[in-house]
Image 1 (cartoon, rainbow, N blue to C red):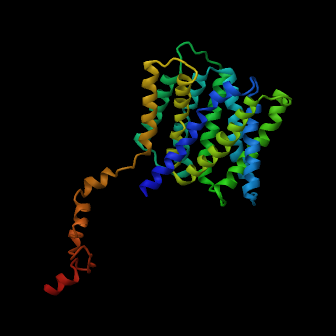
Image 2: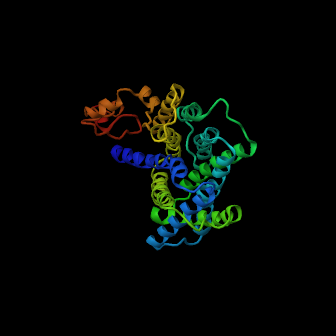
Image 3: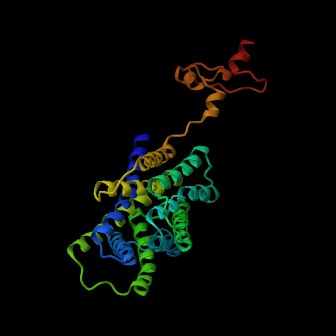
Length: 331
């Protein structure tokens, strides 16, 4: 069980690591000034391919649920993300977006009944502080619209994660992922045409490689793994993995683009990694250990329950006078 859970966490953690490569791919391979086109090309073709592969369409209430989830996790999220990218430095946008784990904690408590735990709340604030140390600059400028867009994107993704957990799809994850990608892509398509106009008539080989990578790896594969993780893991565990994206983006900027990496950034990265790992650790019920510290050992040794007067660990029923049948016979 633990091995299966660990492998599931690791595969889900691949998703924000893949998303952390988006900045590098966008700046190095895609045509400049077309962020909404990149978002639409990521979502719509990948979604249509998954729907064609699975040959499953939504039934009944899943038409509107798929539309809501696709809008939150893809359509509105991508649009707000790119508004923030245009109006804010990357460090400010990433720092505002790092509030997402805290938002999921609150939403999961209210909508899913998940218990708020001290260590996850502390990890949420630590992750926010770590991301700010990693990517935020002292001379960063603030823009009200950009900050609102970045915060709105975090709210959309947080609500999408929690609702995906609340509404488990009655179909394989490939099919439900395809529905949401198509819904998000159809929302983005008219916005893209209205804001950026028609796509360019000529694309280079590098452009095609970049779009192909984002559509196949960064969207189709990534979202399938992401929604698979949401199905099988607590929503709070999944959302903390998203903090890996700015760590990967910063590391790639240092390794590939030759950007400087300061000691403060390194400390921030370590804090982020710790805030990702801590919520994934198994929970230990300290209260039960304090109440009966020797109970587990007695059961392993075959001594059973002391109060039940058992032989070989098999508990005998109590009678009304409080004694076991054997004790009453001896009396």
